[in-house]
Length: 386
Ligand SMILES: [Zn+2]
Image 1: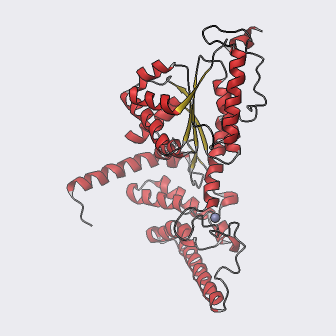
Image 2: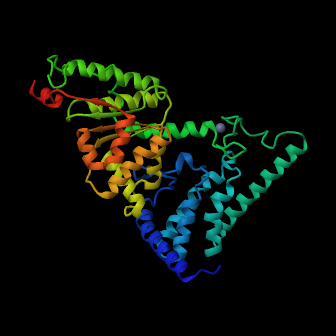
């Protein structure tokens, strides 16, 4: 392949970045066989999950790095990965059509570089098994059975556990899995155990009318609790988007968590995050990642834009830049255009939001969000003083 000067420079720069990043990642995850990251930390598919289909990829990356740099650490990690896979090679139930994914990047790569006879043995065993699987499938089909007649029944009959339908569309089971994963992360972020509409107490709100609002904090919170409860229970049919405004310590975050819990419990994908973190992910997506242990920012940004319900807390506490302004508009506008629901929570009044994020964003919010104003005495202060 012929690359022009610009392409060569790009390739070199990218390779340098990969090498730079993997040096730290490899050291930190050297005893694992990672598949993905959770909160910036690699998971580990060795042990119980040694049959996992991507379990040769990590070793393969290490051989690539060894070929590139000659550093022993990479070779050691790759060899360790290959040895761990022996548990899979010795278990007929774990050998399947992904044999190639497991042993081409590990044992076969090893043999090509080092001529290690043990690696050759592994590669041939895996390949031989693969060939036999194919022969068995042909025999079954020849005898009038489905090719996978001897396999265990798939859990999902629609896609036979491949996750995708014949037309290439993602299957319902895969979408349900994504939602479940998303909500598993959500429940880590919010302490969902305690926050529900039932446990939301009105005891801390005074019954005295505040003249400027024409009602008491107690009446106001009753109304807000009712609106939020209906919103969550009927999601996404009724109610569009919500804007919580008001001073800190009045229950905005608590009610956000109640909504998150109810809506995610009903099977919708919900993402809850603070504005500061949301914008940080947008920014990392733009400038590339410095810290290799962070979440993949592009994936994070897609979650913010595509989840069924985005709950963004502490809007207005982040440092304001023109990048933040445009990211904010993009979130508000894209989600409206795609008919996805959003709940924003802020200590700032509407006029201040407009000053901060500009007229365009503010007018979208005025037109499409129901504003709920929280007022009263700071509950945290009341609790402390009682
Ligand atoms: Zn399926």
